[in-house]
Image (cartoon, rainbow, N blue to C red):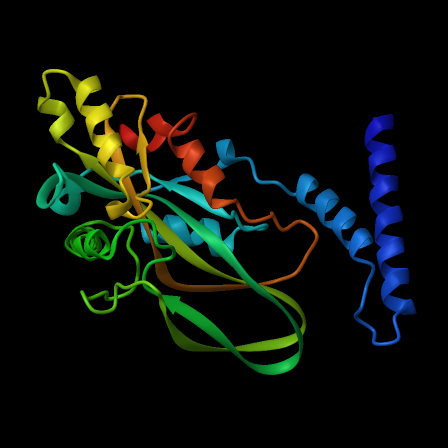
Length: 284
């Protein structure tokens, strides 16, 4: 209890120092970056979201309730839906471009990306919503081959991207879509949700020597032709190729001290393929 009290006093001291820096600034916004960094680190540690507490969602309603309606909102959820889509990816393997790497596809997590903070005086505010791939972690040929699986998931599952993606709009770099919100006076935090998909390679199931196949696949996935392909090997010794797209969902929340810090993408992926693996991977 005494340790917690000391930590509270430390945070309060940093807050007061930050306020003083702002007040003493002739422009009103130039602050001591050292003080700001210490305050941010303290804030981040005290508001870090524990992914063990993330909800397992099977519908857009479940996802939206966690990301937009809870108090405070959760920054990430896992998705518990079955594999119902099988498709083929284009990949550089066997020293050629193959177009028939069979995979099973499904969404495994949805998370909120921090966009900006708004100090509103009341009225309309124009936000920028993104559409397309959230990041580029594969060649353009491979990125294009993700579309059939994404489209089928949106058509058959209850957790969707909310966009009506087409082959020409599922692109990287992402495009922007204007988005206007009406806000009362106050401080607001804005986010856009994104959805992480896993493509499980089915060839491993039929291989006489799975470990040999995994080594072979990894050697090719790391080739420069595949341009930093994001993949993970699960505890079940299956290979999963990952991609992430933006959802048609802007989230605007009044600021309060209880808001969680956004979950870093790499941290979310590591959780999904370690401690959180059985939560989403075993969903039938």
